[in-house]
Length: 427
Ligand code: ATP
Image (cartoon, rainbow, N blue to C red; front, side):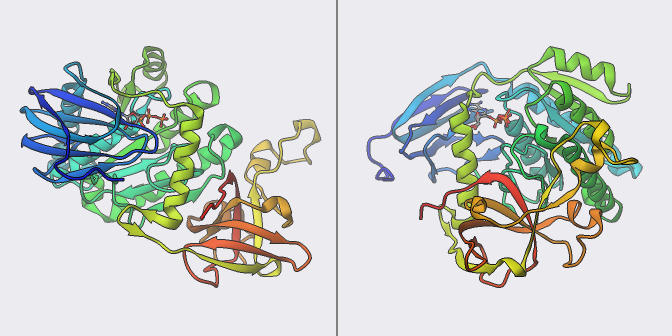
């Protein structure tokens, strides 16, 4: 129920360097219109007299450098103006990165590789979006590397990916996701298989570096790496691993001084580690809210988003036509491992899955690996994925499963990787 244009909105007049923060109530939609002046939403400029629509649960900040008048239509949970924002610090960070790109251009070097870290709910993804949008507005072509397997901004949850950014994020929909490079991780927490997580981080770094060698704009643009909010123990080690795999130049630590000090201590001295405050506007999200966002991301993959509707296909796949694997065998004590085998091997092992009823609702990645490549571990584990399907029903008698797929049959490849993640198709 989109509010009727022109009907009873609330007007806000913002002074320069302030922001209007609002949250959309569950089950509601809110429209935003810029009436006067200039304003942006997470680094993307608003057009005057155009109504932007935000769905239930959206948490938005409209920031203005010069001052502006905006109007909100619809039911917000909260809506207030804040003068206290770290935007100036974020802009300075962008300016410093841009300076590094200029030098890179001049000296035929590579641009800044930046890792954004911090605990959950400090606005990491938002800072990444802001820095990428500012860079692309200046004509740069930065790369977004998405390592947050719980809340991926690029693909479905349980994946790790890279995306070349060619235009600023759309105010309502975020970055246009065309031709991302996506790897299957299989779960929403790096801890379920940290070896695989680190391995795929290295694979992404390798592919990105190869691209930089042949594409000067990508190299100068640098990359912005979004990470998970797990910053202790193996989660911390994964950050250190990522910094080394990507040979990062800058680490932006949001909000946590301890993490900042640890990284300063453990990373080589030429890596610039910078502590930045989080924005007071970032809202803590409950487990439930995170689960809903993940579900929504999968629904979008199959059914599209707002203006764009997709019509997924449902068809039967014979068990005998596909090979389903899980990556990683359950860990067993070192003493029980066969001679010469390490835990690394078990965590990166392809384990065949016998199709059964318990497959129902699982999300499966369709591996790009050529059929017949299962023999080589690199073939499947380190191959990107070409898409995803969901198992909606399993008939063990007939030895077939029904799947929901973005494209009509047949499946483009026959090697499928199972995720821990389930999706119940209610349509
Ligand atoms: P996670 O670790 O879970 O991925 P995160 O640290 O990446 O979280 P974000 O996803 O960037 O955090 O931000 C959390 C939420 O807060 C998002 O819904 C975002 O739109 C909102 N948000 C960010 N900055 C602001 C702000 N200044 N005002 C209002 N809302 C904001």
